[in-house]
Length: 231
Image (tube, rainbow, N blue to C red; front, side, top):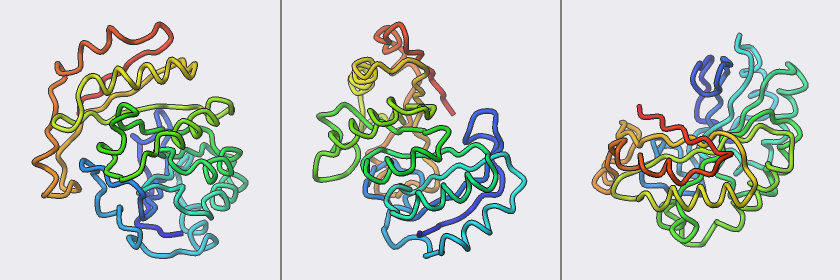
């Protein structure tokens, strides 16, 4: 597995639980607004054997683990790592994913407690916002459905980017969540122009005003709570 870095303790990646964060290298999306753009290349990070990674990660004083990236499900040995972590500590295991690799995600589900699921845009605009040529939407639907049918806590979220997205994207995502029978909190966070965003992309990606999507709250189904988290 290609690993970029390990953060010993984070208090913000999993609500209410201090976790060790493992950043995997490589992503099959090329989102212009990515704040970890240095992790997009498939050769980013360094190859670390699972047993070595397990020893490094399991020495922390946190109450769980968050696996993020990059896109962790690019790595076929991700389920092996999750299994080792779960069996060793019986602690909370969280995964961040955009859901485009369902066959790996399926193997991960038995070892997961929660998943942050990044929904990028309206289905017809997914390729544009995710920066890919093909249409990943069918695979994303498959992954979301698998998680809905599991016992894993599912936390959908969207990063809203002015200049790249519009309120109709959020409305379409709400419609999708409703059609899937999702009930719970849907998090919308604002794009932040951090140092991790590629300079050539900053012209396309603007920091939004909260008021830009305030009205989408009116479109939220009864069982879905929209949470705006402006940073």
